[in-house]
Length: 381
Image 1: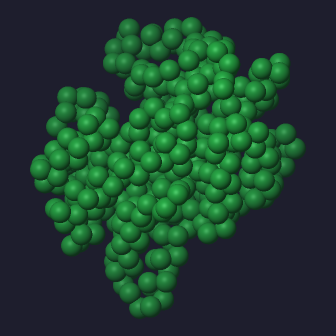
Image 2: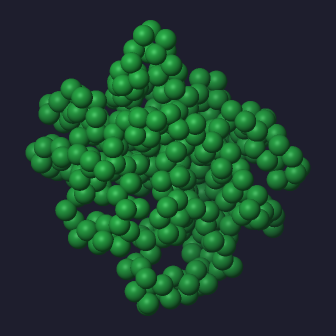
Image 3: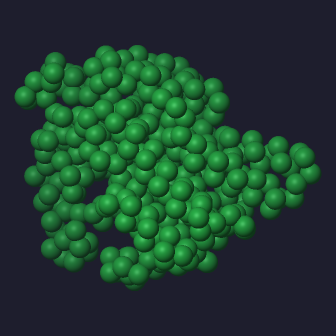
């Protein structure tokens, strides 16, 4: 039982999916209205329309355990899979589509999205990308700021384990997370600013609102932010994981890191705050290589193989994983390392198809088929 002064460490997961046409394997720019209506109705507020009509977003309930989050996320994925199949469509949980063209997509007719399109112009018209956000319940405003300042160090590690966007508009990009190169073209993205208190954060954001530069704080899209709507710390850097198990692993690591940082604070310690210029270098390396190349260990000041860093991270949060009942979910990170992220697996499917004599287009379609199967797969607990 947690003490009354301890944060709740609840978890909520948001994922965005692309809807594809089962005949062409292309993203469907204008899915049947009946499909979208049934998904949103059955989701009862947990399945919503996104900026593009080819996208749907899901959000789990506020969950006390990772097992509960897994059950709810599996349920939401299953609703979209089931409904879409009847309309000869399917969702894919990946941060980019292997060959769909952004210019062919249609925006959702919703005031917020119309306003966004008018303001951002071509930058937002390229947003054929999907992400995964993890909310961790922290019910103290200043505590959220303090933990956010320390958490930034770990953002590249989480990105490296989540990569699912190696292709863009039919091109093998050479990056494992191309999504962030697209998202970074918007303002107020990237690594978060550092603040000494929640009041300081509010003063800065209120200035933007007062001058009409943003309508509200939901227009702050940093990799990590105090949620503008909930008493949570929201980690937004991850690609959308194709595997449900991978998604839950990333959520488990996120909440365990937050709890570990709180545990240090309670012992009058803290994680060292490193300059964003160094964290940004690791962020880039995670985008480019996932975990295939080393990251900077900022304490040692040298490049260290990711496998070694992951071992250290798992050891660092073991006490927290045990307390939160998610040791198995955290340990799944080793499985990701062994068999690869979604990006690794997509590239293998593409290469194997080409070796069998498939054309480039056919190989890309084979990648979509893999994404359809993996998204619909809900492994037994």
